[in-house]
Amino acid sequence: MRRLLLASAILGAPLLGMAPPASADQNGIAVTDAWSRAAMAGRTGVVYLTITDSGAPDRLTGASSPVAATAALHESFDDHGVMKMRPVAALPVQPGKPVALAPGGYHIMLEGLKQPLQPGQTFPVTLTFANAGPVTVTATVQKAGGGMDHGSMGGMNMQGGAASTGMPGMTMGSGPQH
Image (cartoon, rainbow, N blue to C red; front, top):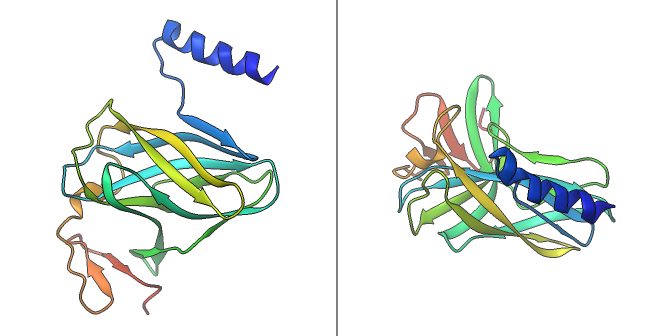
């Protein structure tokens, strides 16, 4: 039944003029709705997606993509009215509790883009889980706009453990700064 529904979704999508959401399912881990914002080569990009676990508890421990020199899990957060960002070593994934990597929260930073990310293009992203291992999905590039554009953060100053993004009220650091 599950395969029939998937086949119907894939075959029906072109008829409706819509692309099916990028997804992968491996060892109880399903990754859906992978997307990225448009960004220039040499700059920083971002990937958002949703992870659902139907197996044993797991942890997202890393990411990679051939379009960037490095990919890392990060978290954006509001610290007393100041938006900040910090790297995250691992993200717990619990059965039946989808984890959304979305603007303003957890996301995958693509640093040192090797090519521009242009609307409509797709690229692979490999997520590494502690138990399930690597899961590769296809991210679709959407137009930049709405929310914070990570692609504009290429000239950050990394002094003193925090980076100034050049945007008022936005810094990146290793943890909350009071």
